[in-house]
Image (cartoon, rainbow, N blue to C red):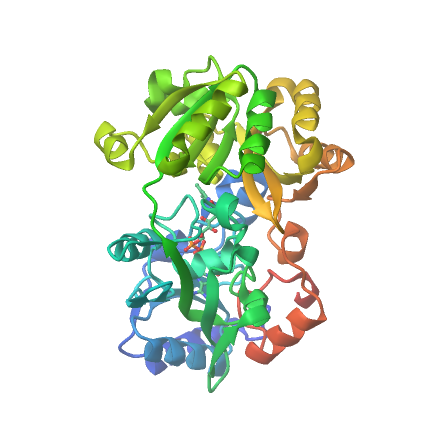
Length: 456
Ligand SMILES: Cc1cc2nc3c(=O)[nH]c(=O)nc-3n(C[C@H](O)[C@H](O)[C@H](O)COP(=O)(O)OP(=O)(O)OC[C@H]3O[C@@H](n4cnc5c(N)ncnc54)[C@H](O)[C@@H]3O)c2cc1C
């Protein structure tokens, strides 16, 4: 009889599943085939390479605990019965992060979604809460989150911390790991008798962007800042290089922005809902601007030869029926293109900020219509951090590798979006300290199997 990767034979695996279900009696479960397939997917289909690799994956059971006590029971039972366990938030990750490569249990966190406490400067929240619900709740106290992904309406707090890296707000507060937004995390270990750990300070980094391989985040303490009614703006420029120069100038001038997303005019057919505001006649900077800096922002647009295609208060913007500007940025830009034309895929890189405009001009010449430009401005260690999330016509894997190698040659740091392991993705070091922590919280190596190369 064939053995599965954890060494449990197929028949005993069925038995293990039955025993597991018995041990967690009372916890909500899904076992219908369509649910098992649906909850084994995320947005990996952005990559034709990952689509081919992951499309057959399926959970054996989906569990939806609603309390911490239920999470602990699930963790203990999975360990006792040697079942793999893959955590799922909103399932919006792009690299198959939440895909159960070896079946087993998918732990859906979305029922553990309570906002526990809001105080001046901080919110304590359960991991399965949707970010938008948290933002709405803290706004009633005059505060807001420091950073959130463009998927905030369907992504969870725990999923963002375990799977995300930057987002809306990173241009003001820095990318997630340096923003100071993560004050503490409570994590359940995957052991026969699970422990609950509280991580603070540098220990948080062990779990941040570890794709749920090293503990189940159950509760988070996040920093808050005073709320701002960000203006929703689109600044239009004669060339994409002008947009890039403008982005650098906004940061240098210290204008208070919450989003600066440079979008190539060739994306305009995928932004048809914005009509004349972004119609393909100019390149754009989708921006969220503090009203106190509106005049300085507008003046700088003019200095760079541009004009404002849109600048609305959040209230007017909501009334206009247009999508929020944050849903035009980060991987929503790629999504817009893919919704219309599935021949696109994408690449992710960090561009050297000091020569970004010139380098992007060279790349536009080199790739022509094979590549559409899109860059996000953020901050890292007090300096600008410019990441490219460019759309690329998909030919084959060989061409993807060739283009990524050329970008590396250009001096860009490429994060491969077409692989499914932490190390190859290029965002997370899995050094001795990380592996030691992983062994201590998941000694049976059951969590999200296959995502750490050195433990395969
Ligand atoms: C259109 C689009 C736009 C995006 N924009 C951004 C962006 O602006 N910034 C950004 O960083 N990312 C972005 N992403 C990626 C993704 O949406 C975010 O990282 C998001 O925050 C993930 O949250 P989720 O709840 O969907 O997590 P999931 O996709 O469900 O999970 C992500 C990873 O975290 C793990 N995980 C989930 N919950 C827990 C938990 N409680 N404890 C431990 N591990 C857990 C999962 O196992 C998985 O490995 C985007 C993706 C898409 C498709």
